[in-house]
Image (tube, rainbow, N blue to C red; front, side, top):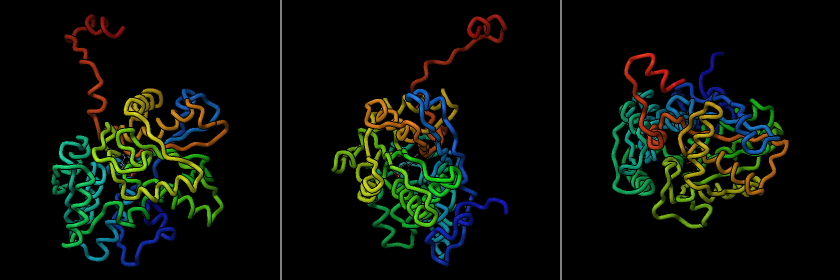
Length: 350
Ligand SMILES: *Cc1c(COP(=O)(O)O)cnc(C)c1O
């Protein structure tokens, strides 16, 4: 059978109501890319893979959950979906709403959304509303309006989002033949780490695939789960995880703890350095937030808090680099310009 997306592929593992009507862009089935040169840079002696989620249809892992949330909503007759977003959820909701032929409304924090994400939401035809406030303010508003009006809420507090997102854990086990020893990933609103843990546990109970330890990584300027309290004004270049009140914070802490792992924070400089290293050493360009998991792994190894010897480690890279071109252009010096002559070109290249 040709590949038809994560719902048909894993239907029996997903807790979705019977009325669910699959709306798919053939999301999922993303590659688990070995990154041996990066592993060498971190000291070597272990197997390191990137789960390259930027290759999903709208450019982030959000598509896994969105196919499930929109399929459920449309199946019960919803004519419009709404979400608050730091960007990728907006683009994804807009894409799946377009696919389903329903309206989408997305709320974004004013001026804080990366260019490629905003452009995506607009391209797919969403009604985009900027909120003078943070992501957390936007989330509060969509919860309130969806209680009063027939707008299906597709943020990750929607339980079907997690059902879809846990398919990434299934794919990793199916590819490796077992769970990795460690899974590293960025943590923002904390839906993804919660979903991975659900997925790994479900597969392990049914198939004995083993359980990974989870290393959840926040940005230092937006690290409520590390600090132990909400952050009123979260700040980080990694806009996808610029969240001060994670909706699934409790579950994320529980997942990390149950797994024998932990949640840590890294600085923006560490995130950007890792984004660059991954692109220049391995040819994988991801958005800043997506490099946080690897940056956290590198920091733990460097500090001697983690011995990777002989381990199999998977880092989830959640979104594509094209989502946030500014993050690269900002650090790039002025481009070299030459007149259209060979000698001029040779002078700068050779
Ligand atoms: C949404 C998102 C995250 C954070 O995921 P949560 O489920 O909110 O923890 C990380 N990286 C990217 C690229 C995202 O879009």
